[in-house]
Image 1: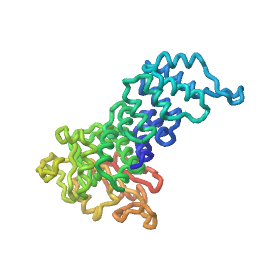
Image 2: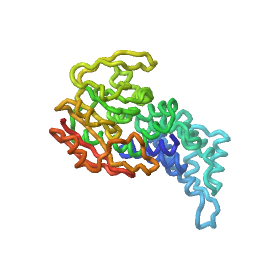
Image 3: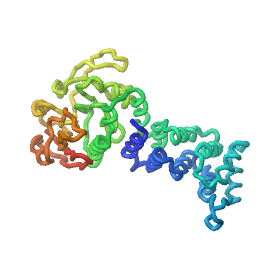
Length: 368
């Protein structure tokens, strides 16, 4: 994934609850000064707020429009900045001089030399420098900016480094993330109890599972996909839950072979590729956000027992002439009414439509 794609997805995931992520997006995409100052102030903390404001105002106010463009210095700001620096060596003072006496756009290397001098022990300013100038360590910084409350940023970093390809990028597309956040939000809005053992069918790279673990009351998730290339990326993204007694486990399996009642024993792979048998209790909830990809959908659907809590998504993206058309899309519907009628659940908890850029997504939650 490209840096602009990564920060865009992070903004979708966390921008509402952590607005500072919006500054991260601006910094990565445009090296915007206000974003750099906002992030630096956040990372340096309240004890350095006055010093940060002095530097920010010196940079912003280095030209006085009443003096025909000549550079002017606000002495009190300059003194406040210098006396509060953790490092006042010659190179830092020279960097300040160049920053405030030059009416061109600030040199990023000089700016970060001064920012790092405010608190020489703060490692995050170096990380911010790497993000701003080299577009590296974006996910590491995002993990810090979200107060380390979420596992996706740090695990996504490991995932992106280890696995590459269009499918990986597609799994984090804007539409995919919004569709899966929709699942999480409705579960919370309706206070739906998912039970102890969730089966995510056609689980792909485990993005939905990661979102559910972050945002919902979840005990155990089993992710099944017929594509053998999916399990390792999925377990990398959900690594902390895989390591915690297999709260999360991804396995390669045709979902038509799943057993939902009683104990279900099947073969899976450990992270080192060793085979191991796993035995799960009966599923308490079945989720499939990729029903449009399921051939012989009705046969699979008939295998899910009556009374099971189900969360099913489909869409109307059926344009074979569109460049984004996927040949595996074989089971679309044209409306939420059609999707609801086809599923015919015994009790509907939710039925709705999410309008996305290229298609509409339909979701039904209920008891089969």
